[in-house]
Image (spheres, helix red, strand yellow):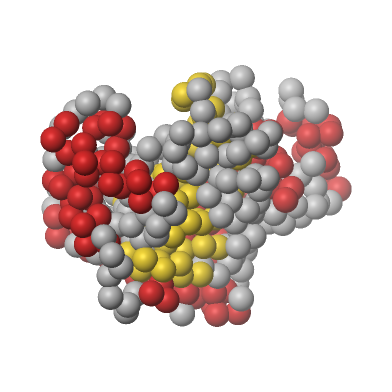
Length: 373
């Protein structure tokens, strides 16, 4: 929309495309600005520092922004090496990977959840699905297959690198900080269908600091396919934005207290209690959260190809949001669900100060709020 374009033009400088290209170049090592680069992010950068990055100018913009299909772009097909001509042609006609990301729609205040529709085009979703099925994919569990999609991976063609960098860049706009070395790359995930699942959220519920990633503050879930049934991202403790002023429903206060007790005990995944048998005195609390998901309480974001769900794990004071427990709904039947996730982390330079951490998170939350106005 016009308002969203105006907001991002103000933040990143210049018209649509120019600011994006400069921002992408600013997020890369200086040695990589002539092309896509060898890694995502050259140095840790706070929101206050990178907001001015587009001032690098048109030269950086043209270096990072992919050229439109033309005779010059077809000349690059030969540079793709092991990638076939058909694969290269699949990228022709795609929208610019660095276009304005779209208007965020507020879904919930607690936790902060937004939805951006048609963030990715059908062609981009298809390309990312292909890329996520590479030979390096690893089994996460019997219910998921995951693969890290790093921009600097030598298996990518230049067009594929530009696509990944474009996704990283646009998610950086929305979530308030560019890609940096203190966070993991994009993660592609395939969730196969199942004939029956014992629980709606079949892999349990968690907050996104789980797995030893204590500095995550926000997450993007890009949906690369639309399952035939199931596959939503469920937030059993969330409240819809339009219900914010309503009094708590029956049991809602009890759920919040259970959530906080788990977090106070450093439990960030219900499986740690219910499967691994840690902190067994909190079994009832973990079961209460799982049962809330089973009963379809809270908010669910449906998996629709091209859309992206954005949510914050941390509140404005920097603490973990007890409303942010979530899980993936099982995919039912013969279908499957493809996603591309980005786990945004607090840059290293603001981790040592609770005040700096809180201010950083506040800025990221305020940035998308302004884009939504």
